[in-house]
Image (tube, rainbow, N blue to C red; front, side, top):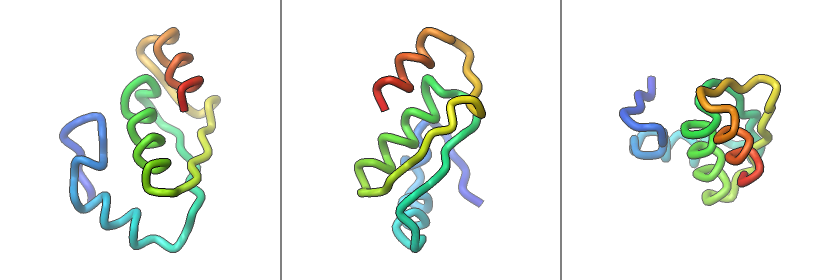
Length: 74
């Protein structure tokens, strides 16, 4: 299990090792916290040479405007 203490899962060293160990380049990304956690995850995957695919219809948010901006940024 990988626990995250911040919005960025990659602050946990286990997450970085796991995503490096996996033999895939594409990840489907969905969940809650589009404006924070989803954005941090996608940017972290991109910086590691991965190809995240965000499913906007399967993402939740607390601030709709911030979430729309986050999706445009990633």
